[in-house]
Length: 500
Image (cartoon, rainbow, N blue to C red):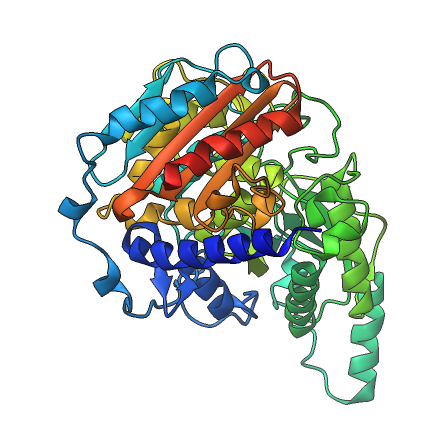
């Protein structure tokens, strides 16, 4: 248990962090009445599952929720007041230089610290050296997806049919009386079941709750058309290439498919907000189709045989649709929880937008092209996946700080979820249990950062409100670290030094 003085220091650091964070809110927004914009959009989108009775709007893209006017603009200091004093780089060299030499960070760690308001690099050590980023690569995934798709884009999962019997064309109800109804019923019993297809759109957050709503809309649409027996198919053709991540079957990621329920998790974590390792199904798409079939049967539809994988006909009519939360919310959740499934989904959505194959290779090409188009320093970068699980990924600490600075650019408000999604030191996501040591506790509540951990690889990249209220972006990459715990503490210490 911590001593009273330590608890007081923790509380004081948290309060101070919140006060100073408010001063940087214009750079770290977007905020609507004190809420993250993505959270506000999600709240407005609840209950909107689409379907045959979905009212108004473009059929494939619901209108974004309106945003309230900013209420904290007056707290933002003018840009000129955020410029770094002349002695800050020298101070950082004296402070950070010795800490980077810690053996806990391996033989040659890399570092970059940038003044966000000016874009000036205040400190750099091997900042242009490509290194394994682990999950900090998700910052690049987030910037590419938000830039290419826009923050309000939603990923749809649809149910379609090309069967004439589901189109409401039955003209056999012109006979009056009970006799005519009996003949119609007898005829329907002899018909083949209506074929419908559950089409995966690449939504890695699809869960049983939304599948239930989709089944309700589907059953209603079929009943309205006089259909009571179906043959269920499922279509995962949106994605191409290998399903398995190069690391192989792993509790940290499901096979990458365009259709899944609860990220293929086989434990109770699928009922929560996901995040973290869990046993995974080897066939997430087939399992999702089985769940959907059960939900349809619960709603009175008879199914003919188990679901079968088949590509939907090109001329199919849509019966129902459910949409993911906006990409802004998906980005925030991906960064906060370090969600690998969402990361791989977002890079494939980026590839689809660019007209490239939705595969590991196509996603790599699309993301690197998107970042290059944004004139970011992508030299030497290799983005083999969107999650950072691939040990062959390479990125520079200079690119990471450039991505964070771009996300804070007042002219690029669509990128703000990159900053608002970063975990808060000592409070949320993958940083909840960190920054507790005496040499790092000053960073608690003051730092927002993305973590990265693979065997022998540890990284940390994020933002901190530094001296004078300046917003600084930092990135530290370490390879061949002797142990993850000691490396994490060393990274926490490095970033905490930026607060003073």
